[in-house]
Image (cartoon, rainbow, N blue to C red; front, side):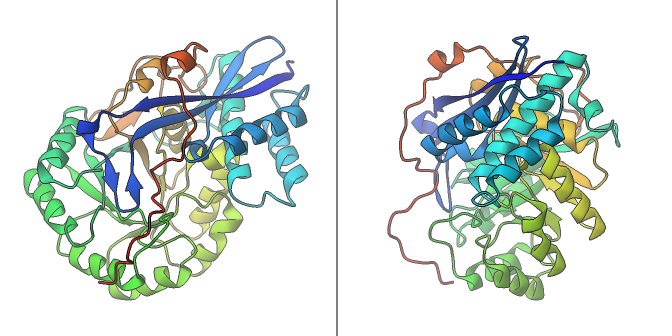
Length: 391
């Protein structure tokens, strides 16, 4: 039996070349930021997790890691459920949702990775074993405002074995032409997801804008429209269901089953999305079970590095109502350092169960020097004054 010795977080950063010009409806993506959780036990074995919230903020993550590290120090590293309840129970006054749960999720993933490495089994076996032999996985990028860049990136995804691609909306008035050009080029070859990215936009569109966009998208073939409203705009989600037959998906920043409960009871989502590097495996299973009861499929959100990608794959293989998992397809070199086997194999839109111990990821402390992080106000969510889009 080993004890938890320490929990650390390492922030890695890769500045994207200006030529990529990644942007979307709510901001600009200038950097790939990866907050890696490293949990070390008393035998100096380690497990890795990731914290999606760390893409947006730094000091709170550092403080919460320090807090939970002290709380869990010298506890049994194999008692993962006990650790989750200890973290949540001790912080329930201030941590029912949000960043605290996100840090817990990163620690939860790291504990599973550690146990898998120690037992020499893949994480999916620790989660109860596979329910399916392979999982659909989609390439997630599409941060472009012109068809040439969009189609070139989508072709790169197709060549890598993907058969579903996700693009972001930059301007709701211009996105239809991009969708049309994608569907013309990849007809009967690759499907498209459209992400409005309004779930956490600082200055979201008026409800009518999203409804009008959904009506226009009905004339095109897409898998689903993601996050057409801010997460708290439950009425907007109700309203759009009256006006469109599109599948409506959300919402990646909702971290717990309890938080999803109203959305399911109000039947406003056709596809549930939770972020694997926020909810972790323990709360993620609760979310999926709740969705299962309401006959809703799940698309795992994984807008991060190899760590969260692998976490989504292991988890998705074990849960019957997980329809998709996500592969963050932005072009950066960090994943090559984190994947145990440099990359994963994707064929005809699917990836199969990993042959690995733990998640199938590795970490070298020298990566902090290779990809140094500089604390900053992240431009990913723009807070600049701008007029609300009304139509």
